[in-house]
Length: 236
Image (cartoon, rainbow, N blue to C red; front, side, top):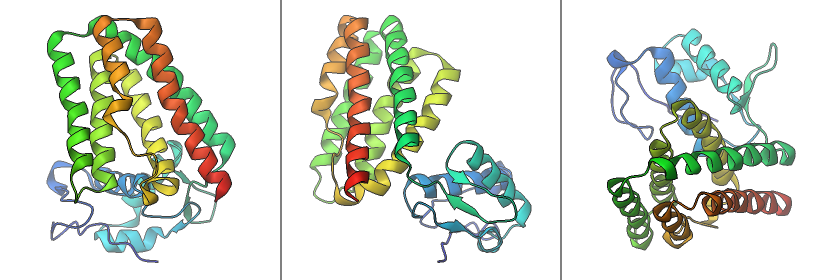
């Protein structure tokens, strides 16, 4: 099964977007293209990634692709076995549960810190991002990917207010793994799409700086996704 990633030499737009090689190393370009492809569910769980084919498609050598694959494996998106090609991470209920539980607790920490730091301007911006979800969702030609992008921007803004960059980086990795689960099990049927109404209690608690309530709301919000994913996996 062939997948067009990008042509490093021609720099033409592709379905992966325009990537500028002179601003990034070839390994970074390969890493970002492959990561986004996995998160978006463009490969099935357990599907093999033929490094030589990907390298040829990208117009680069195997080495940067191999290094990018190793990096993605260390982050949990791929599996690499000795003397075998890399495969997309399989959907294992225990691993999904572990990722979601860790994310729920760390998102709870982040939102508590955000409540301590939040300013009126931050609240205005967060409300604007939530309204963007409403606008995108209401558009007749909107895609689930566009809705998910708006939702990710909302949550990323809250983490930004927390001002804990190491925590934010760790959470981004967990959130992206959750996006991969959603792409595989929920998004193809537009099941359990994000809604602005689901975020309004969070925003109100942020405004009142009610940390205890915020932590409960955020954990429930994340763990709802876990239950939906696990239920969908069991049915599939």
